[in-house]
Length: 418
Image 1: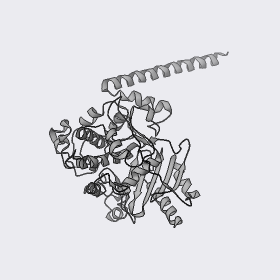
Image 2 (image 1 turned 120 degrees about the vertical axis):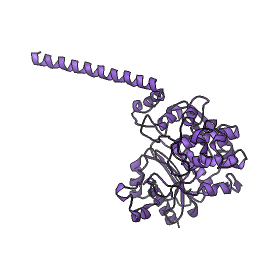
Image 3 (image 1 turned 90 degrees about the vertical axis):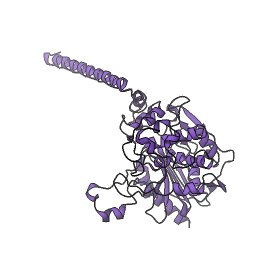
């Protein structure tokens, strides 16, 4: 070996040594940071994301966490079969497959017009609802009011959670939580590993995390989507009913709407609290049954599950401004609303493209699951003060772009059927 080659080999070894020392130092510093700040949830988060080749959670995280079962119905509601199945056109298929879709179902009335699964996903597969579960929590508040366990949506949160009896938090009501206008300091982020969302998804103390928030704005004035609001609603349900959120959901809704499969609700630890802000695992057909309950205004086969008076408020847009300082046209009481078409659209949605879409006037239900969601339509800065632009697009701000693709496909299928 020449002197030059020997020198080069020695240099490479030295560089590798220093890289190893640097990596080890970073790992030590990271561990010190985690232990000093108490963010031990990061260990579980890192193991179940980056070390699995992902940058975030998965629709198949069910077995990563402890969970509670929502029992299926004794009498299964069977969807009718279409005499002539709808087809999806090549250009439509190309659009929806760009976002790692795993299932797409379209129902007209009680008839299943179209059903398709991708990859390892089949009819019996249960996947993560993510934040689509928030709507289920909102409906459970209606059940608790019907049962007389909660007197009113305008009750103070402090009536159920003692940590809210102090400071400005005592002004926050159940309605404010449902509206996503609590004015709390929750940091909503699906990417920041130091956010409240990461701590709530991978952590083990949801009660401490959510009750230690503090008020930074007057409640009821501004829409700010915060998963912590939904988690607090879960604790209110538990306190008011004396039952676990999953047990109450199983008793009042899941077992009442003809579900054909058990569902599973993730917990923060063994025998811990349900992640009320997300994480109900169910089949696509059963998610459609939840959509049918919403489409029928809280009634299931003639039986009132959710009071009509509550559903009226639930599907209405509370008067408040949004992050862009425009009027709220996008959110009811824990359900998304789109009012810019011929008929109102109400839908549940999750961060990775989980959709349960209902258009009651068209007797239409759409379910889409997958691993990527389209980007939200936002108000560009250069149009912030352009009233003409805002009035033209005001109903679309805050909605994912792919929502309109799914609606257009389903409406085209119904049109072809006629």
